[in-house]
Image (cartoon, rainbow, N blue to C red; front, side):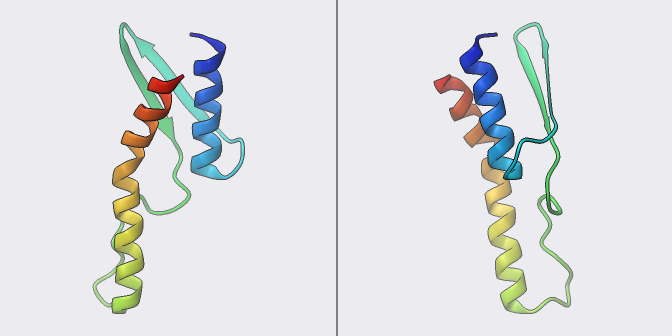
Length: 79
C-alpha cells in the first residue's frame, strides 16, 4: 500500500463523515474490504406517512448513497 493510497482512504473518510473518523479497510488477496459508518439511515426512504417534500429529500439521499461505491472506486483508482 502506497502513501497515496492511504491518503485516498483518509480523504474518503473525511468526505463521508466531514471529519477524520473511523474507517476500516482490509485486504484478502487482491480484494479490498472497506467499512464506513454512515451518519444517516443508509438507503432509507423514510416512512410511508412522510410528506412529498420529505420523501423527495430522502430519495435524493438514497440515490447519493448508491453512488458511494462508485466514488470510492474512482478515488482509489486515481491514487
